[in-house]
Length: 171
Image (cartoon, rainbow, N blue to C red; front, side):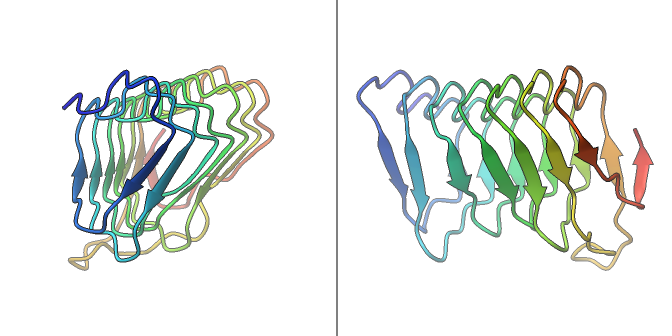
């Protein structure tokens, strides 16, 4: 934890394929502009507050990622993010107050099970949310359902389009 937090000169991060977890607060408030994941990435978890306050505008998260932790990208400069199909949990406030975020796109056959509390709260530029075509079953063959926690899109004053998936159980 806190491995590179507040490293004020850090601009580019190259994550090797062997990394399975980016721990909480790893790059907290570091002015990172670019994050690259090596081909064949084994990353499964981005921890709580890992990239909070970064200046990343776009990031390509690797397939195989399962969890995006609480406040992982909170108050960052993201403008667009594509969530890999493998992600099952986006924890609370993951993208909260990303004021420049315009698009939140989910890859086809998404395995998302939970969209946590306040994930996009205060994303005042967010215009489009696309959950795409979702997978029907999880890796074990059980039917997939999606749960939306409280205030997921509260204060998203520019939101024009969102399609709620048919397998959603609670909003």
